[in-house]
Image (cartoon, rainbow, N blue to C red):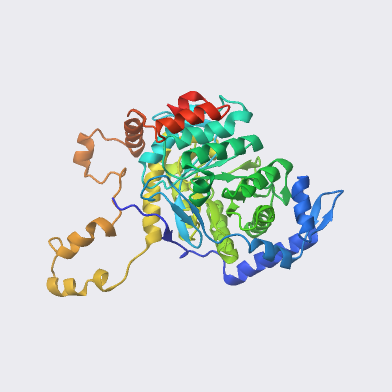
Length: 487
């Protein structure tokens, strides 16, 4: 099967150039007239030293449009989020309109293969999800997708990253929770890389820290952003303004809040360490105005993340986007159509690192093993759409048309044999048999076939990615890590 990744998107543009300009100008007015609240003292001092107007009683920071643009321009336009396979096939070049798609985080529950019930997630689930991601070709990276309920918060970071790094060679990204956890994760990654310099040259981990909408950098995530940036570990600063709750109900108003909040995070990373690898991010969605709950499967989420992709391209920033989720409680038709529509919209817009696109159900509260397999199929089809239609002398096939003539056929053509495996997406899960063979095979639904694929992966003996000597060193030197993760 042809693996499609890093393809150039950007054919879908929900915003005009004039729209982009108005969102940008409105955002600069917010920075100048409303300001952002910066609640981490060290971060507040960085903004003050850079020339911002700081009200130390309220921690409100205001700055000119020129200052915003100057600081944002220090961020690198392209970031390499690397894998650990020798050939570099899992590397993701994040920037421009290149598209990669993968899992997201952080769910509190899991749904096991074939089940409709849920249970609280544990550290072992992170390891097993990593094994799934390693085996599913259309999932390009592993963003840590569950929060383990069996460890304390002080040990969450090392256990989440450790569980993943020993089970997949794909890039691992994760939200972080404590400064000490960030430091220990970096130490662990340096051991795996062989040296601090080797890790910075080829970063196979990255971290997520979240500003709070609207217009707030809180103390905890401000400190975590600075810790990651000062260590030159790629850091994402995504925001999640919700229409009608923490942002205006209109999509354009939401995009302004999202833009200001994420640019504030990018600026904090750059003020900490100019040129630090940082990603502009969007998790925007809408609320169900009946009860104000967050919605994950709304088409408006796809529209806003597609629009945010255009804003990131305007600023020449690598972009972390959101798509591919569902509000359904099980892997059913609703899960399929909600996930597919947002994935296609955001990918066609040229979003770079599209997280949450594999495995999430139930408002992102639950990670489903079966849905990882279903989404792997959706992502393969989505990336085929991103690839588009190649038009040249070979694909126009005028010589073949001349040979066949009126009423001719192309079944036996060498041209057909040459292009058949690369021109058309070959599904791994979908059923394309006639009814007879399908019935003889047990009349299985897509969900049942997904369950079977899960069992095939999870029932196989687990394979450690890390060498034994590295695993032993990690167990000996990294506090709080559950030993079984390195076996």
